[in-house]
Image 1 (tube, rainbow, N blue to C red):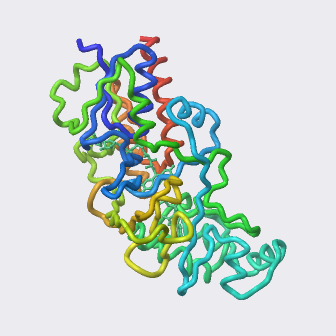
Image 2: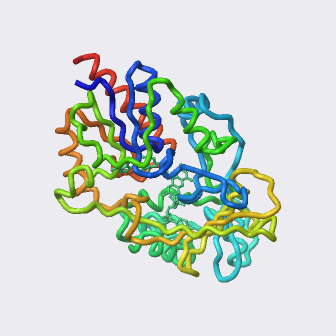
Length: 368
Ligand code: FAD
Ligand code: UDP
């Protein structure tokens, strides 16, 4: 019997588990089918020397002191508060909607209480909040819904707001004050030397052997490992026995602009109603890098391609529950992460889920 633990996927889920289990004395074989570690959080320098996120912009934020402290073993941080503007009818307004959005859009001069009153008047109250449409209409009403949410959501998911669970639109708050930060978490910062450097340190342990460019399907002796931690799509693990779980994909169009030091005034500009892309992100805002040129990415949502987003809606959750029942019968496999747990997790939530999984696994092993 092989005393090594197999971990499939080197994103946050797989890498955090690898480090925890290595610290506990296990030897680890960590594989990823991609040619690099870090999963979707992987970053690298482009040909012009700008640090970019090939799989779309990744901004770290968390309210969990535990998660922040755990990651801080492997990186220093650069404080960064993300700001986003949305283009509506040729003008740019803060999103999440705040006082400046309302005043700018409607030519008003409301104070905080005035904005609260305004929203009270335009909101379409819903008795029960089930869909993302309920969330948006209930908080900001029809006009703001059409201007900022319905088109963006249709592009991003290929679905109407009414077809998505409440959790999707609930990610975006509504504010009556001037706070224009995208997130309000206690800890908001970027790994000072980037995500990949942080992952390299996390995996730099004598018990961890990393093998990229290796698909789980190539591991012929998987059953001989003492345990497997699987962080890929759960439906793929079970060979799509109950059919495919929908995951939304993206095409990333990266561009370097050698002649401009900056492309836009904030990290991200959203395009709810214009263009085929949802948003443009300029990396230098996120990383603080100083460079004479700048690099941007446009995100084009699509159905086919790498699985990036689980699609939160009731029928998909029901299908996931069927796969989860199969997963629970796999005594020697743990399923962790955004794809394996089919959860719209942010990075910090994946770290927390991975720490929990590793702890549970160690307890189970100790109990025999
Ligand atoms: P992943 O990072 O997807 O890692 C899974 C790994 O498993 C992949 O590397 C994959 O190649 C590998 N794998 C899959 N199947 C196999 C197989 N059969 N064999 C071998 N390897 C396999 N979160 C934030 O907190 N802030 C953000 O700003 C943010 N922005 C995002 C932007 C985009 C465009 C996307 C798509 C996600 C964003 N996220 C963000 C979410 C973040 O990417 C995830 O929470 C996190 O990276 C998930 O980690 P994971 O390990 O679960 O999955
Ligand atoms: N959303 C929107 N308009 C926006 C921003 C977000 O309609 O300008 C909706 C959309 O459905 C999106 C969801 O809110 O998918 C969550 O947005 P977030 O920025 O958190 O998405 P992510 O960064 O995960 O792609």
